[in-house]
Length: 396
Image 1 (tube, rainbow, N blue to C red):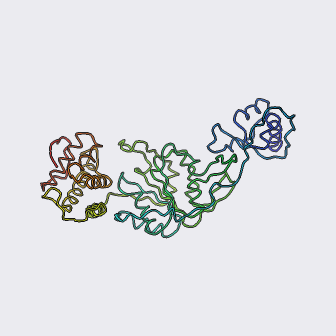
Image 2 (image 1 turned 120 degrees about the vertical axis):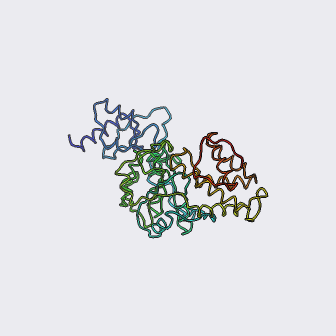
Image 3 (image 1 turned 90 degrees about the vertical axis):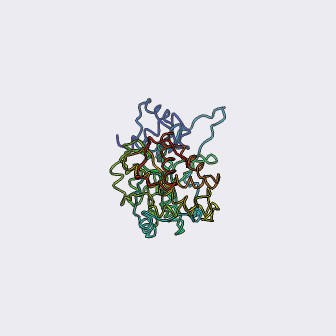
């Protein structure tokens, strides 16, 4: 039996058992099983055409030229028929609304210039940005787009993110099945840079759908039976705490080992370090101004100025990071943690309280070791560029 005759036999039996599917063009798994139980095989193309996101699963059946049998009218009220529409829920896009807000406190550092060059070129050149948490990987891409007035679509990935959320899905709108384009398809269609945040937290099977897209070639959008050619300006930037090899030390629980073929499709990988002390000092001082503490000579506790406070914070973070890199402690002070401390100080106007509140996320031993180190740096003592986790005494 040819494929065409198999399809015809399938449609005849489907219409015989379930006349309503001749209009809905969709069948449930139970209905398909009923056709199989009747001795008719289900064409493979039907199993491949599952309606994305449907619960329970629905499968689109081919059109064919078979006419559904006319059934006798029944007394019961007919079930509402869901009509499939090929339209897209949103056909217009305000690209200006996707331009990120400019952060006046941001200080460019690290790979900023290289990433800016890539974005300004308009070329498709996917980049993977790896680095420890809280060091501005995503912010750098956002601020480049903000400063160049380019739109950006940012998607945060996790283990629950699926292909439907990224590419597109079908949904019911006023009784009609409508196609909702996902952020990747929108970015391709309108030539918008795409930022995939925490990409190493995405599921391996989900990320495989990105492989053809990472090649920069036309993409077949099967829900609309359409080939989408990426518009100029479309690019993919991925950020991660690992380089796709997982987290051996357990610091980044939930990250996954990524497929080697997937990683190979990124043209370049950037290693994002923490800012230098000079850059970090400027970030802290900018935040003092932002939070209304513009007088850099204003004393904190009659002995220190805000300049002293900023310099102590940055030096303290540098010592902790060196100790962490040397394996001397299990926790770290990120740039993000420093900004938390500055914000806490702007609220409570108390140096000691701001620091301790923002260290509460660590265990007590680590917290007190960090507090003790800061108190020594604040007092002008020489430190040996290391944190002693056993030290639990000290006042800020």
